[in-house]
Amino acid sequence: MRDKIIKLERQSASLEPGQEEREILRRPVMDYTDDFLNHIETIKAYQKSETPSVNISEFEPDKQTYSMEQIVHILSQSMDKEGLNPASGGHLGYIPGGGIYASSIADYWAAITNRYAGVFYASPDAVRIENKLIQWLGKIIGYPEGMHGNLTSGGSVANLIGMITARKAMGIKAGHIPNSTIYLTRQAHHSIIKSFSVSGIDECHIRYIELDDHFRMDMNDLRNKISEDSKKGLQPFLLVGSAGTTDVGAIDPMDEMADIAEEYNMWLHIDAAYGGFFILLDEFKSKFKGIERSDSVVIDPHKGLFLPYGLGVCLVKNGQHIQQAFTFKANYLQDIDSMKDEINPMDASPEMTKHFRGLRLWIPIMLYGLDPFRAALQEKIMLARYFYSQLKEMKDWDVGQYPQLSIVTFRYQPTSENHDRENQFILDKVREDGRVFISSTNIDGKFTLRLAILSFRTHLRTLDIMLEILRDSVKLIEENKIKIS
Ligand SMILES: *Cc1c(COP(=O)(O)O)cnc(C)c1O
Image 1 (cartoon, rainbow, N blue to C red):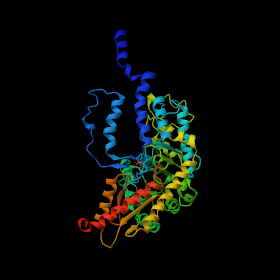
Image 2: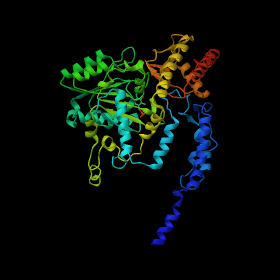
Image 3: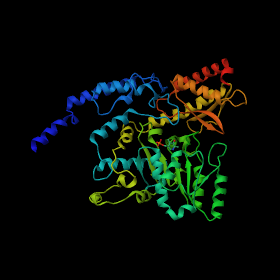
Image 4: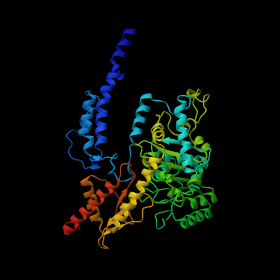
């Protein structure tokens, strides 16, 4: 038996490389990623699928083994050849990604040490760091002490935690559902609707509130709908606002929403996944007024703090509420409560085992403080305004509203006719070029181009490229008028 066990140990030895073998594994990846960053300015933001020289689907995961060098080669010949490059500053579609380097080093550290960040006693300092970050973010939002929250994989899961917490805290049992009402606008992110479904509140009456001229929730319509519902004997339960809608970056009037939520004893949830960190800029403090009066807030460090994908946050004003929604006991966990100076992350989340994801936020802030983040956020705001004003001066362009945050919507509109096809053509041209990537949306029934600036790598030169491509596309349209429309 001992011989057999020792033989097995030898057979699995490759899982524990020594110092030299680790270097052999690490080197090709370091070389590749360094090269990637050194050339990030010239790597396209988007590539339409060309036929890659390597077809990744042909690799059966366990049929054959490869060296790390070969693996790097395979990926660089396949993955790099098509699709979106979220690390590029040219990514101006949807909500752009980031990927600050310091976070990737933190992820490396977290993965190697593999600290268990689910319960306090397993790694008290990992949990202290995560809970400290939650308190720090709470302060940024303006929440009082006693708040709590959770570091999640992203904004969608954070919204889900918010909805589950709201339902539990408001005591919405199955029997209350047919009598309860929820208010939001059609500009709310789809993850909110999804989280209604997952948390089982989608069978409440869902009221979509009208938008004002700036795509914000209309307070008169909200008041009217709530009062109608109350008269009918329904129970207003939940009000959901956005601090930066994904479509146009509209900030709902949160202070007035908080007044109404208080008056009717509703839970106020604010989805600030995209826009939340702009509160760090003085000029936005007043625009975010009222967010501190909400019951829960979602913000996404993998958007507004430029982290690589994998960090959203749900903050709950009354920390008891999030714990009541997510604390459950089990026999095999009986030891964990005897050593608990801090709230266990697993008691504020549907997750149990989780990696130490707080480190990817903590290390960059420890390294740099907030000032460079503030500067980058201010730069994004000014770039959006720059693009807006440049486009406004170009003839035949209909620029949407002045950007409330860092999103600009615009449309080629030389005459009053429908020009959807020309705009689709322009979008195709932008994608063909690939140096920048934008997405489109539908505003007031019209196909509209849309650009969102949130990558720390997006700079003045990026927007100048964008403007150049727009000018060139219009030239093409003018030359080929008949073919397109
Ligand atoms: C991006 C976004 C989400 C979803 O967050 P993920 O991190 O993509 O899961 C939710 N709400 C808003 C307003 C967003 O912009």
